Amino acid sequence: AQSVAQPEDQVNVAEGNPLTVKCTYSVSGNPYLFWYVQYPNRGLQFLLKYITGDNLVKGSYGFEAEFNKSQTSFHLKKPSALVSDSALYFCAVRDEGSGNTPLVFGKGTRLSVIA
Amino acid sequence: GAVVSQHPSWVICKSGTSVKIECRSLDFQATTMFWYRQFPKQSLMLMATSNEGSKATYEQGVEKDKFLINHASLTLSTLTVTSAHPEDSSFYICSARDRTGGSPLHFGNGTRLTVT
Image (cartoon, rainbow over all chains, first blue to last red; front, side, top):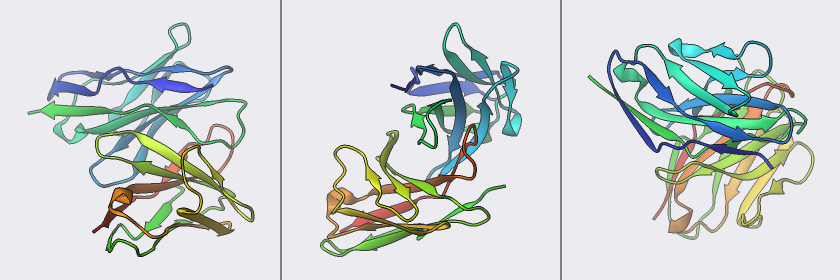
């Protein structure tokens, strides 16, 4: 079975400081990992993904994430947070061998960037 | 990039009426679309997988007669909430993948349903 854990419901960070949103996963095979962002009353926007290759993945709006196989983690990071980054962030996973199946999402982490 | 259009963005209806939500893939063909429901301050709950030309696959606990899904073409899936009740009020989001493998899901902007 596939699962995703986002241990923090809320992350607060001051503008200009680095931010990290945590995610750990569980799959039986190789993972496909994704980060999405959701603004109020909107759908989810794709930020970045890890399929294979370099463990450090760079995505939209200056975000990046590091795949760590030994720790089964895929934490989202940004070197310098902006107030406009305040939103709900979702980590998602799919097993490489699972065909055209839906993603399994974490419960989401609300990021608040304070000016 | 791949775009998924969802309509309407919000709807208010009276209890007992039915509401149809449309999900279109604008620049790609989607043999499979996914419908999610999101409760306030909660994660996405997968409701069903919509398959073009065949019956939808519903997740456990989702009433298929309550939430009718039709995927009549490669670019359109519809979700109809039948005989809506206030407890059906929620945020419904559709998604589709333009390719298999590691391609991400592309999401519509969601539909806020309020049943009075």
